[in-house]
Every structure is written in C-alpha cells, then in structure tokens.
Length: 173
Image 1 (cartoon, rainbow, N blue to C red):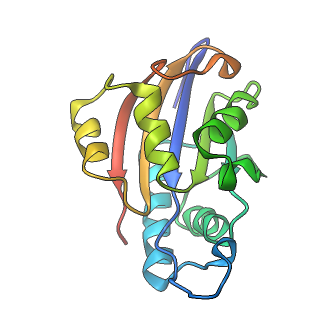
Image 2 (tube, rainbow, N blue to C red):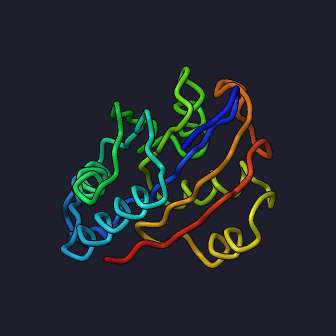
C-alpha cells in the first residue's frame, strides 16, 4: 500500500473468540480453537488486501496478544508491536490517546476489545466512507472483525469525525 504525505490508515481488529472461564480473571482469558482459526483468517485477509502496518498497538490481555500472534501466523505483518494497558482498560479515550502517540507511522493496527473498537470506528468516521462498510459495522462488530479507516493528518490531531471507514470485514476461519 502506497500512501502520500499525511495520508494514514488505521486498522482496528477486535480480538478473536475467547473462552468463557468463570473465576478466571478477564485479562487472562485465552482464545478458543475457533478464535485461533478466526484470528489466522484475519491475518490472511490483512495480507491478501495489502494492509501491512508499520506499528501494531495491542492490549496486554492474553486474548488480544494471542489474536495478534495467530494473525501474524496467518500472514499479517507488523514492523513493531507495542503493548499498552490503555488499550485494555482505557475505553475510547485510551485508544485515541495511544493512537495519537503513533509518531510517524502511516499504517497503524490496534488489537483491542469491544465495545471500544466499534465505538472508535463509528466515532472516527461518523458515517463517512463506504456504505457497505458502515452496514457491516452497524450490524455488530463480532470477534475477529476488522475496520479499516483512512485519515489525512498527523496522528496527534486524530479526532471524531476526522476519518473515513473504508472497509469492514468479519473474519472466519
């Protein structure tokens, strides 16, 4: 993918299907076998569509870390991977803070949780972009979903309504 000037791409990946484990801390929940397959399918989709992030920002929860590992095994690539607790517990504001600190990277991928990932995609695009992508987003943002947003500007200026939703895809393996 070739981008010019201040053009940026933000990819939001919701973690894959995780175990329901009563009594286990939420942060420690692991992916199910289906979740591993779906995350690998997300990696293939990212690779096949030419979305190679320079920077991957990942929640430190076990299921998000495993989602990125399986996506990478499926073909996704990331030059650098950073884990940030704000992507686990910071909500929409935490995700935006982390993305705004992305520096010079042109393509950034965030691996996180819902309802935060859907709220970030919806808020940043505010209905702008692909009608088909917005229909997929509005139908729910299930596990292993990917939203791809286009943005022109510096990451530190990223705000609601400043991006366009280009693609939204639900991955199943």
